[in-house]
Amino acid sequence: MNKWNFYTTNEIKPEGWLRRQLEIQAEGLSGNLHKIWPDIRDSAWIGGNREGWERVPYWLDGFIPLAYLLKNDEMIATAKKYVDSILAQQDSDGWICPCKKRKREKYDTWALQLIGKTLTEYYECSQDERIPEVLYRAFQNYYALLKTGKIKLFGWAKYRWFESFITLNFLHKKYKEDWIKDLARIVKEQGFDYNTAVNFWKTPSHVWLRKTHIVNIAMMLKSEAVSHELLGDEYTDNAEKLRTFLDRYNGTAFEGFTGDEVLSGIDPSRGTELCAVVEQMYSYEHLFAHTGDKKWAQRLEVLAFNALPATLSEDMWTHQYVQMVNQIACQRTIIPAPFSTNGPEAHLFGLEPNFGCCTANFNQGWPKFALSAFMHNGNTVINSVMLPSSLHTKEINIELSTNYPFENKMHYTVDSEKDFEFIIRIPSFAKQLKINGEDADIKDVAFAIKKGRTEIDLEFTTIPQFKTRPNDLYVLQAGSLLFSVPIRYEKKMHEYKRFGVERKFPYCDYQFVPQTPYNYAYAGSDFEVSFNGIGEYPFSQDKPPVTVKANMQQIDWGLKFPYKSVSRKTPKSTAPVSPVQQIELQPYGCARLRMTEMPLLDKE
Image (spheres, rainbow, N blue to C red):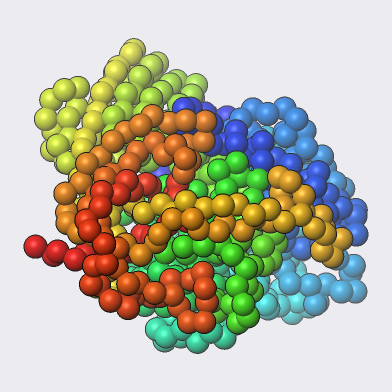
């Protein structure tokens, strides 16, 4: 395995459309949640009377790298204010969570695992020298309580045990003490083994179980990668075995899985929880970093460029709890909802549709993805994902100017005070690769960079082609982008207050009511690609940066009984009910209402 190390927010700087995407996030819900949402504003983590478990750690886990990537002084000060309050509440024995001592046995320590990960992130961003000692005391206390049997892993902590290893790896690297390895062993032994759950993943049960919970599963994929070294275990690529199984029975076109909230089978009109999208991205980031296997980086970018923007409004003031690959409307449905265990509002865009975990947790998606652009190992640097960004270390400066994935041209400017090896990961779908105008083999490109300035121009083509899906359906993909028939919609705004939480513009609830047809099938395989430039909102439905024209016909698709705003899993009939029409398809991440998996009428 060729292990890679992450750079920090002090070394990576987002540029171009990526920086704009992070700015939108900071201007939207992420950057303002502490002002408007009681569970963050008045949390028990900072001495208030609201939720004192996962929501503040979740939010900070994304807010902190967002603040430091943008060098936003106000946000950095806010992050410090929250961290200061959390640290001030740490007990003399090391316990750090907002829970009275007599209630510790019944406190689900998933919150400790999460705040440990968040404070580790904060240290990497801020270099606040208080943090290592705080984490040392908190996890030594965790060790003492688990070792003596005063507490044990249960609930979410039992099913998310591997999240502890983000902090445990950090602590062991710094302190190299044996108790850290012993704690790692105890945590794994008390944690759930997902290899025992695979038979539960074959057929949707529509019963709420932690072993089939989509977010747990998305987190779990990195478990072996982040834990095997500290445990002294051989790496077996168990994630690939489990991912393949999950994909066979619950896969989606965007490289994720259905889960609303539990695994939901193969059906493009089922939901995928937003928490699962960002957690699966985080798993893939660590899988690539720990293994160097480029399949994880490619799957990461497919998830990030499609599933993440699709479930957020363009201004990122609202989000969905679950998205659907074939999403013809976002309207409150009758009960029972068209989901396994979620309610009828789960696919609306709002402040906290269905449940508030995603409100806090979606924040990590874009910032941590930005931190995956460049990685390093010894004297080697890799551009793992071609994101517009720059890298600045003491001896190396690399600037990547690009509109990727909307356009496949990259310009690198490298200024170095030393010789080093620079690798560019080339996606497997790239065709006709050119480096500095010369044809090149389709493989990862390695450059022996010499001291001084080096400029590299790299480009390739991506060909729109059909990817087969179950049930004789197809999805159009060009590079890492999926394409969908966009459905125009009317937004219906709903301002109200529930359980003391106010929803008002711009963070109220929105229903998206369709205004154009959805019932399409492909009528051929001739496509015309157009790059239109990137506007104020990179993933805009009104001004998509790239489009593909395709010949299509309407068919009798039909609705899923008894709903009036959910398409069937498969069409009632593929007999055309309209002449051939040329439809302009959009990237999946731009089209909030869309048809993505459709039949192909003329397979010749």
